[in-house]
Amino acid sequence: MAPKWRELADRLAERIRSGEYAPGQRLPHIRELVEAGEGSKSTVHAAYKALEAEGLVTSSRGHGTVVRQQQPLKRLGIGRYDKAKWRDGDEVAFIADRVASGRAYKRGEQTQNVSRGPATALVAAAHGLPEGAEVYARARLVKEGDQPTHTLTSYYRPEHVEGTRLVDPTPGPAGRGGGFRVLYDAGYEIDHMREELFARIATPEEAALLQLAPGEWVVELHRTTYTAEGTVVEFAIGVHAASRFSWSYDFKVPDSTRKTAR
Image 1 (tube, rainbow, N blue to C red):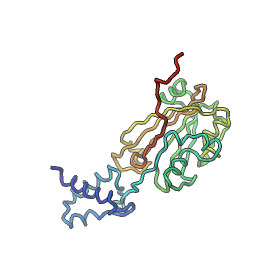
Image 2: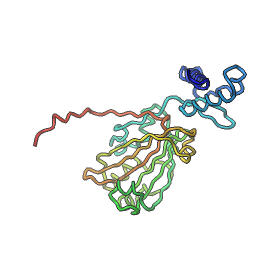
Image 3: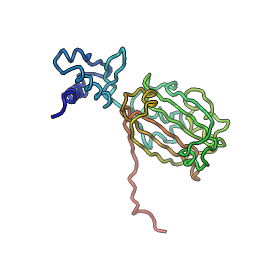
Image 4: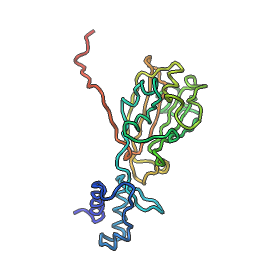
């Protein structure tokens, strides 16, 4: 038999998923549920903490326990990097995700900090540089309204971006078409990339920055971007709030048996 707090959490979760408790609505105060016979104070508290860890609610002083927006942002896979979006238009990747999700966006929802310093072992290996070599780090925090959704830090070789908008700390995308357009204008047209995803629990610093409950999960993204010649022009590390995204990939299924013999 499940513990009482788990049974209560499951009942409340079902009421959230059915829409009885709508996004933005405050759940009853712990005292109210205790008085209604749903369990002791510790039982209700444990149930609310479980709902918070599962990404269904948020809790804060002064606001109580509130139901989260349950429709996650769609993070496009291949489609978000379509050259027609950033080379020929002005739709940077995070905006492409918002458009695909049917959500509004503002350019001020992306902030950034640019610095130059020594590359970590991970960054250096991605760029084929010795550890400690100088690189530019362009760190962004992306929000939807007031709620942070993810961070993304791109690392560049100085010789690729010196004097470009990618080292300009002005908030928002790096001009029309964003960073990929800046690289294109500098003579580094992106051709292919590799993305790796890792799920893990957020660190305390990440939980504070992304406004996550303790114990919530994040998806860490490593993106390596290449030119047609195989030059790495960007290595990026992103940390995404797992409960705020769905990941969407659409691609042609390969058939290696159709390769022409040499």
